[in-house]
Amino acid sequence: MFKLGVIVNPVAGAGGPLGLKGSDALHSSDGRSEARAVRCLAHLAAGALGRVTLFGYGGAMSAQTSIGGEVAGLPFVAVGQPLSEAVTQAADTKAAAQALLAAGVDLLLFVGGDGTARDVFSAIGTSLPALGVPAGVKMHSGVYAVSPESAADIILALLDGGLVDIELAEVRDIDERAFQEGRVRSQFYGELLVPRIGGFLQHVKAGGREVEELVLAEIADEVIAEMDAETLYLVGPGSTTQGVMLALGLDNTLLGFDLIKDQQLLATDLNAEDIGLALARHQGPVKVLITAIGGQGHILGRGNQQLSPNLIRQIGRENFMVLATKTKISGLAGRPLLVDSNDLALDKSWEGYIRVITGYRDSIMYRVSASGE
Image (cartoon, rainbow, N blue to C red; front, side):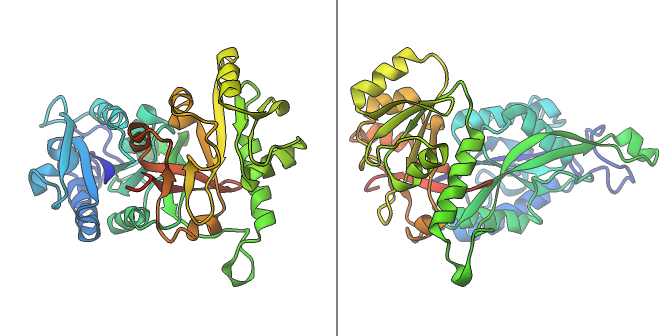
């Protein structure tokens, strides 16, 4: 079941009919955001009934006042309420976003304008993928789908196992007072992780097929670009992860775990005890590079059993970097990536959607399931 967080800014768009250049100073709920949220969720429900549960603040901040207890027929779980139902504030948006992050939603869908995007970014940063439904007066940020229906289509593609890229997109806003005086002053506030309809990008060759050697090199380049000198990296088995070691010019254990830090090889072919000792000695951040088994889709529990359930818990799901070509993901034909650690409770805690690095500056979101579920 896909867990979709929803935040509707009831004020968004209210400044447009008034001839204002934004809605930041308004407190009425006469905007168009709720109607656009209903459009998006109704389109989503038409193709996703039984596959999506909505989470959000009760009332207008989740479009409940228009649709009722369920939202467009989708089951709804309340994670809180705004301080005042009559007048919602930026603080309510931020609090709702943080509550949805804590609830473990797979994606945060927010309806509003640039001010809403700023509030969402300040609350979650890049900790959670987010997608905007455009409803505001100012729309300078790159985090919005082109329409309410297209936002729903992106989510439906996720549910159907499609190739959905996930990229950093800019959150920008303008100074409304300066804008009213005829001066456009746009400011960069940060970046959100935003899903977009995926596909093969620059490394596609004739016939729509990837050239594996080029793609593996691109994946390696992306991993190396993200590496931090203070982080300890466990590089797991597989030819995809091997590409990272080759790019670094380091020896590699094709069927085992190697340990690197600051792009230097510290140890090779580690077993579970070796990994536990390495984690105990290192007090800083840890990342693990793993890949999917072609055709099967397992990312844990096949070929990398050196990672015991206790080690997986200790490291934390958020510290695993999953690497795979889009050809390999397409070969799953929509089936999920699988986790089979021999600990069902742990496996189920991994369910949801995870970032998969598929090239240089190229990642997708893809579903993870407990093996056999």
